[in-house]
Length: 270
Image 1 (cartoon, rainbow, N blue to C red):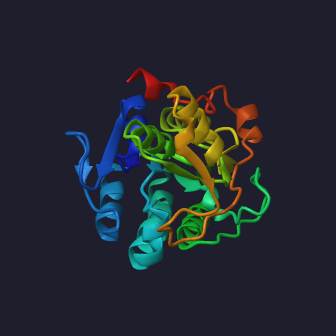
Image 2 (tube, rainbow, N blue to C red):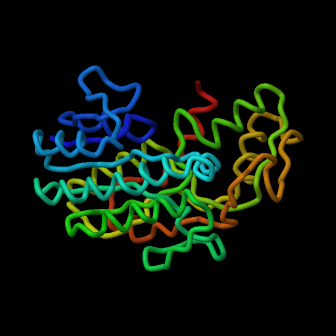
Image 3 (cartoon, rainbow, N blue to C red):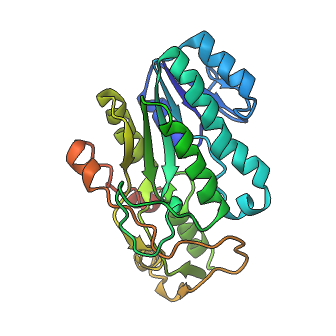
């Protein structure tokens, strides 16, 4: 049995790909899942000790970058401390642990970060995710999968599409990232699970600026005039890395899954 923590964009895709999975969710999830707050550390450890999964995939996180600056205790517990307890109990039941992390552990000064580059987060979200990575990697049989700008049911491409459809101007940050389709990422993680890989691996889409991405969507919708490149977005509390794009060449050599496939076309076929 595979334990999947979280039923968001990525967790739900993983659940659909892994028939023998058990999903732990906080508010909404499958009928055969387990509703639980993962920050109830005793409860989550007890569940794992009783079910003894052969692998644990952690997709749970507070991903709202600005909210992390305000709700720091919640962000630290969810993004950091949860992983400490997962690593501890995974060691007891000898389960393979896959922890999903982020490009925001980097400062964005150079872009196309590889697995050997040294993290240097510039916001609290990135810091808490780096703490989570450290806890995961304290366990030998663990894999940290760093990704970027995951989208599917939500995310930047969907935000742009919906805003343009409503005739709203899109202010797109000029920075670069590696937007990753949730389905493609899930397929890559399933392959990594079968391979039993450990350490750190970057699994993300191609490098692109948010402006370029927004403009390409607007071009398809014949609404190019509604997209504007900006240095910062009004209302942001946290600093964003200018170029947090990830170099996924190692993963491309390792995997047969085309995890850099894009799901943008689904916006126009819905």
